[in-house]
Structures are given as C-alpha cells and as structure tokens.
Image (cartoon, rainbow, N blue to C red; front, side):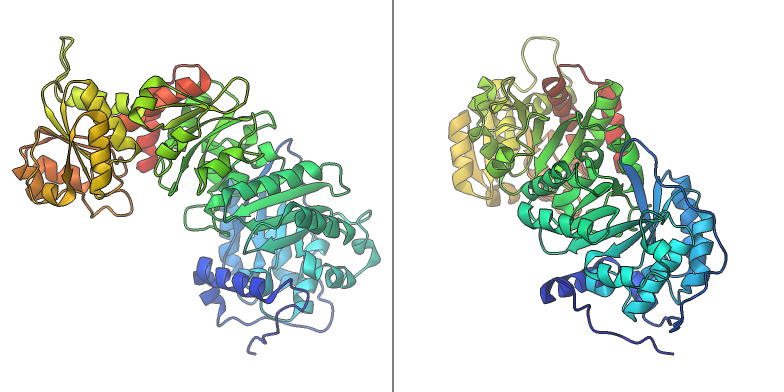
Length: 582
C-alpha cells in the first residue's frame, strides 16, 4: 500500500525549524531520499515480535571520544555491507540510520543488522520533522525503536520532542526502567538554524535528563565559529549532571571544530563519514580524517590547539601539513581549519582566545586585519603591513604577529632563477611584477624590494596598488595594462586566489600578456592545483614556473617553529601536502 504521510510532529519547536530540517534532508541526502520515494512500510497495530533473541551488544568502553560513523543505505543488504566496511574502517560505534531503509521490517531487520556488527550500534529512526527521512506513522516508528531495545542494541536515539510518547510506547516496564534496561537511550535535539544561547542549551540538556535520557545529544547549525564556544561550555557545565554522557555536534563548516576537537571538549562521541560524499550531516569529516589526521583518539583536555584562519578555508592543506609534523615531533597538539568571518571577535572569544589555543596561521582575507590586532609585531612584518602568523604571548595577553610568507616566496623564486653563490640576490636589478595588493602581495613586493628588484604592483583596485607601490618604493599599473601586454618585466608573481580549486579554469594574466611581457620566471602563490592555468600557459611561453607549494611549505615550516619552538620535518610536510592532493 502507498505509504501514508502524517502531519509534522506537534511537539516540534517551530514551523521554521521543521522546514529547515526537511530542506536539509532533501538537499544533503537527496539520493537516499529519492530511493525512498517509492518505498512501502509494513505496519501493524499489534506489537511486533522480534525475530530472534539477540545477544546484548557491549557499550563503548573506551577512555576517550568514540569515533562513530553512520550507515545510510536504502536496503538491509546494502546496510549489512556498509556495517562491515564501517567496522573494518575502525569505527568504535556504528549508527544505523534505519529511516533510509526501504520497507523496513523492524522485528526482522534490526536483529539481523545488530548481529552483523561487532561494535556497539546506535539505532536511529529519524523523522522528517527533525531532519530525517521517515514520514510515516509515529507509533510505528517508536515501536521500531523498542524492537531495537529488545534486540539488544547498545544505544537507541530518540528525539527529545518525542520522548514522552517514546517511553509511553515501551512494551514492558522492565524495558522502560533504565535500571533494568540494557540499552542506553540517547535523547537528541537538533537545531538546523543556529546555536541557541548558553541558557537555552542548558535548558534543553536539563529537559533531556528529566525526560529519561541516559545520554544527551545536542546538534546545532553553526553560522559563526564563535558559537562553538557555547557547545564547549555546555560540555564543561554538564560534567556533573545526572546524564552518563553528553554529545555536542556543531553542524556546518563553521562548526567543524566541535567535531575535530570532540575528545578535547569531552564529547562522548563524534561522527565521521565512511568516505567523502557519504556525510550524514553538513560539515562532517571522514572517519579516516578524525583518526589519522586530527588524531581524535589521542586528544586530551590538555591538548594544545593551533589552526588556520581564513574565509574560505575548506580547500586549505595546512591541517595535513602541520598535523603530521606535530605527530612526528611527539607533541600533544592538533591543528584545525577555522572558518572565521570576524577576526577580532574570534580572537576575543572565551574558547579560541584561551591559553590552550597557542597560535594561528592567517590567510585570505585576514592578513592585514591581523596586524592591527597584534599586541606585538615583528619589525619586518610591521614594515610589510601584513601578518600571516599569530603566536600567543607568554603572558597570554594577546599575540605577536609575524610574516613568514615573504622569505619563503622570495627563496622559492631565487632558487628557480639558479640562486647565486655571491651575496647578491639573482633578483637584484630585475623587474618583478606583483599581482595582488593583499597580505601575500605585500610580502612579495617588500621581499623583492629588499633584494634590490624594481617592483611593479598590479591590482584590481588601482588605488590599493598605488598605496602598496608607494610603501615599498615601486610603481603601480592597472590590471587592464597587464592583461593587454603593456606591463613588462623579468618575474611575474600572482598572489591572488584566482585559479585556485574549484575555479581551475581561471587565470589572472592571459597567455598573450605573459608572452608579450618578456617574463622569464612566473610564480603562482596558489598551490591547489599544483599546476595552475597560469603556470601551464607560462611554461608554454618558455618561462620557468615556480609553484606555490614551495612557498606554502616554507612559510609553514617557519610557522611551526614559532608555534612550538621546534624544527619541523620539512620533507614530511611536503609529502603530507602532496598526499592530501592526490
């Protein structure tokens, strides 16, 4: 029979949240949703008999945060295959998202899936009104969750908004009573719009505990990274609550930090996708990244944190580069991507401004703003007018700013020009054209001027080009002049993000302008992809090309030393970046 649809749960918090949840489901998990469109669901007004008594699953007994992955499959057969993959991939807990399964027969299918999993399972049957896929009869859904309890599941996840009806549907008093029930009940709350304030979060947690939760789970969409502080604060404030454990999950790219630092924060678990493209929530990293790159199982509350601040930041390879070096140096530290809109607000936040956050790499568009926020500035960085490195001062009162870009970039260009055994740089007397007047552009312009080169600055905003040219003793030109071939020189340096993934078919300077400009060397600060369209066309014009990878690794190596006081394994850093791009 056609699957009946019911109205959204009357206990849901708001119409807008219901709409947002449904929209997220359709967008993020559309393929699975489409598979379900023609499915049928078996129903019965009688309590289903569980197919076979299963052995009780163990609960997670690890000393730190459990690495958890979700099995999202349209059929039981596909789910069984994914369960095997999840266990082999090292998941500590496997969540069974049975709301995605076509025609689920809970009494038969749940024992089968639980028996196939050698690690603890969370059984989740998420309704559409809380971001899931099930849109059928609510009582059928709740009875299915109790089938999981009867089958010996380690954990069952039920929404806080449905908790009263859930416990009322318990088949026996013994199962309803947490003292005699094996399965731990996770009561969860999801907000797909924002992170509520701390008082509201505390109230939600209290309601979960009062409603019978063994474990409380709160997931919220993070629109500003500083709101992660509220989730971390909740974990600290609820350590002495009657709940056995608490889970917090910041959704969205801005909330990734809550997932990557879950063990440091004290969350019971964190979710990772089995593979790229199999995410069950926005901003979710992969299981392998959590384990191998961010080393979540090794984190403690004392773990120090560094990170790269930018907007955008998703394409950054800095975490791959720094985390490998931190591990090789034997340091209890983790380096994470940080999507930051307001730098001043971020640095002043109670979480990211605390002493555990010891230093930050700074990238587009915050390098000049970072300079103004420093308590101290390295003299060279002050002259350049931009910093790409912030190091927490020993007294914890502010940061000292450095610029490691210019040394790395100039060194890479000099090496491409053959270097020089004499004290005179091969750039001396040459004309260097710098495209871009932002933080990286300032570093290149001043670095070239320091080496005795004549500098021409080109920028989309001609006024900014003039300002930088005046500051470094160079001259300015318009972008139109450069692209029309009217600007000539020996070295062309792109410091903009044009040509970076995903816009790999773009270039800041057309091939005709490279050929007509008489350039011998072309440098591109973009390192992803390794060979940009600019570099490809430069090579076709007979120029020596210099990849941004050399600059990237060089500046990061200096940052590592500033952050840690130790020398990094540079070869390992370079390999980590290349491997992450393979």
